[in-house]
Length: 371
Image: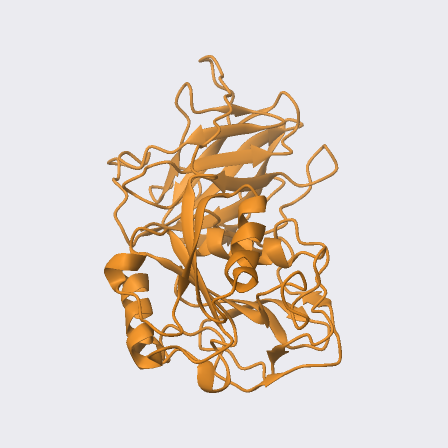
């Protein structure tokens, strides 16, 4: 990385998207205040959502048009759906239309599951029976840096600790976290807008069989909805190589993967103070050790110098300066040759490249599927 003669600018951008996200709890349960309010109240308290509505599906089936105003929905069952086939079809249509879906117990287990076109292509956890007791807690984190686990420190399943009986996942799904007994707790589906949670979503504030209030069940649900809606994106090559600060630089995002909104912001943190860097973009992932660099380039190209497959946000006003910097991405002009306009359905990968002690280093990388 060569030094630049033009002025270097760093700016912080606070995207308004978080806090303006609209989601719905779509549940087949008792129509009593406790059951209607427990999950929405906990989600609103995280500060990430503008609206959290409750839609009952024990006696009626919502249409696709009723769900489309929401960025994502989360569903669970304590009773059978009014029509599990019709609702499964609606939910598949909703994902196809760009909506995010999170499924909790018991909607992927026993006779209460989503059916119709939902199975098997939209599943992450394969349908199974459920188990409960003994009480169990948060177990192995298979991807501890994943945004689905952002802020999660503890999870207590409560006295019953409802969970799936088997660990089989659909092809392409990833186990992000498991219960203490090895049962799947958080599973990322092969589709970008799909997350399954292997626990009963009500808390002990409403149900004696729920997860223990005070543990991080609220964050697990909120993170899943944010990720499914495209407001949290998939990290890889994490953690990066440590730099002169003693730790790795980190990349994250705010805003969304919504092409129409065009509010995706890249954030680089824990850069060496005063050192400059810039964000890179590419359509393919990879692992390359560039000559003279301390870190790993996690974008793919045939040769690092003059690589046509990787773009650099290196114009004045796009440069970041440590320890923290951010950039609002112009989705209409990714810095490739020629400039590229992002299209719905495309996947783009981003990383920060920065100077450090006369050499260079890289942050981890993030993959974004645009919708």
